[in-house]
Each structure stands twice: as C-alpha cells, then as structure tokens.
Length: 204
Image 1 (cartoon, rainbow, N blue to C red):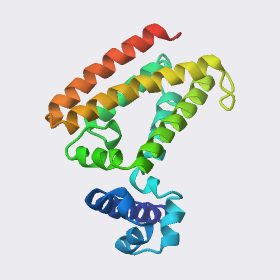
Image 2 (image 1 turned 135 degrees about the vertical axis):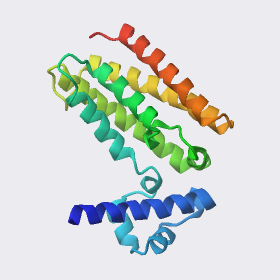
Image 3 (image 1 turned 90 degrees about the horizontal axis):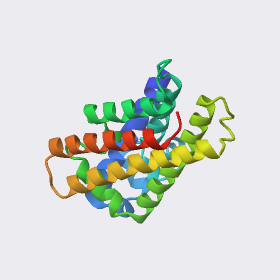
C-alpha cells in the first residue's frame, strides 16, 4: 500500500509538471510551481525527482527496466538482439509513451526540442541506456556486467544508435503533421530493417 501511494504521488507530480511544461515551456516553470500544482512541498518533488528535467523525462527508469527485463528474461533460444527487437516493436504496437509515436505526442517532443536543458538530459539518458545495455550484453555472453568488454560496448552503441535513428525519423514525421497511424507503420518497417542490419553486423 505504501509503494502504491508513493507511485501515485510520483505520477501526480509528473503529471502536473508535464501539463505546466507543455503549456508554458520547460524553462518558464519553476519546481516550486510544480510543487504547488501537485499540492506537495518542493522537498517532496526533489525526493521523487532529483533533477527538474526528470519531472518531464520521467520514464527513463522505466525504459532501463524494460530493456533489462527483455534481455534477462528472454527465451532460451532467443538472442538479446531478438529480445530487444520484440520489445521495441511491442511498445510501438501498444503506442507506449516510450515508443515515441502516439496521439498528442507532438506536444511532448516540441517541449523537449524547445528546451536546451531537456535536450541535454535526453542525450545523457541515451548514453546511460547505452552503458546499461553494454552491461546486459556482457552479462548475457558470460562476462562481467560491471566491466563490459569492447565487443559488448560496440554492440550496445550500434543497437542504441539504430533505435535512436528510427525514433528520430518517426518524431520528425509526427511533428510535420503526418497521421499517427502512418508514422507508426513506417517506424515499424524502419525498426525491422534496422534490426535485420544489426543481425548481419553483430556476432551471435
């Protein structure tokens, strides 16, 4: 019950922050204003979100968790790459916020693009994701997750770059006003081609 209450509080804070950031711009809203809107103290906001940017990019931990689960809980005959392919295509099919494409998502992306601080945090999150994935790939190959070797780090960099490129293309199309269904279908095809290329480039 305590954990559910904490989750609801976290979601309420992030939800109020998102509304304010989209309406007024990320750099024009203070953490104190978010706290007032969520009816909590500023200290409570920082207890849940150490950085202001994470109020808006609040799904970064969820993305890390989903990737870790996909790789570690994959089928006995499934490669980490196949597990990641399944994950990103499933997220897209569900129109999960982490897939980058969905009704109204253009407001989110415009807010990110309009804020240097959010863009910097997004780039940092991609680097964090790459590091996490390198550890997972090293672990899957029987190595040390804390000290991934060159092969694991290279594979992670290529995988993350491929996914990021597909996402960036889809976001650009949605911001240009293309119908969400068409953008999602296009992104699914791009992701399939991306993973086919990765399968050819990376060792099993």
